[in-house]
Length: 316
Image (cartoon, rainbow, N blue to C red; front, side):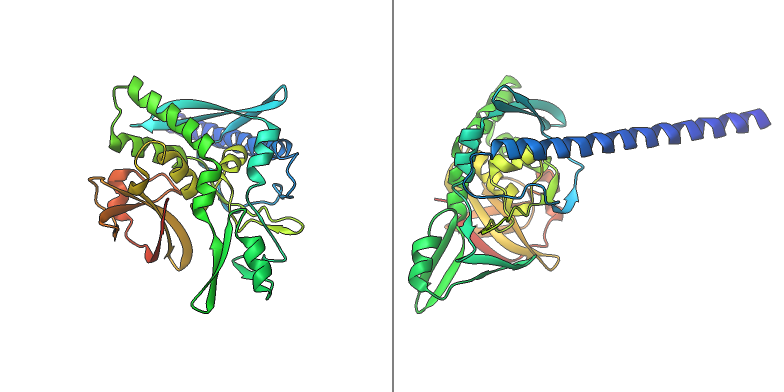
């Protein structure tokens, strides 16, 4: 009888040891991949005229998704991303970036600190009182400034950010469509489902790329979210919309700024989906609000009803 207890104890300790070893090994791989992706994105951004700090650690990192594995190939960088397309069946997409095109793309976003700058970790403010200067210098590069009824409004031009990476979004959408068709599973619902999976399974982290005299409002462009292999709510929502607009009608997609659990947040609304969840009406359509930050299936969105202070951004 005592031998049985010894056997069970030995088996238990072996399982604990193996699981600890696997977890440690996986964590080491994640750290190595994160460091490698930082080096690769710096290589890809080498021709950019706007400085960015990719070495700063993201806020609230959750590296439990599917890393995009990058490697240099001659002058380009290849990224491979395995993600659950449908029903946990994985697909693998391969994307190729080169430094010139990558740098030219990311140069289309970023505002000079003489216009708009970070006051602290959570707040950006207008830094000039010269309205003509702001009108001339903020209405481009992904930001806007306008005067309405004697007061002014400013912020991120999310439509422009979605458009900046339209070519990448179309490429990813083409892959998703081809995969769905190969499984005889192409449908409106599955196009949304597969795109949501693509975005949700990228690890979560709040980027802070501000450097020298330029600010980026805590946003990574779709190219950057791929290359650095993490992204947060607004960055993922931009990526989701960028891909999805190549798969369904643009009027069926909206971006939504909101609050949840007391903090700022961004989600995406999609119409014509037969699922329960928090809804919003806009321009005669009813949209379900979809979470992009963490794996949440379409069927599970009935659990996500805590979005408040909704501000809809129409895609055009």
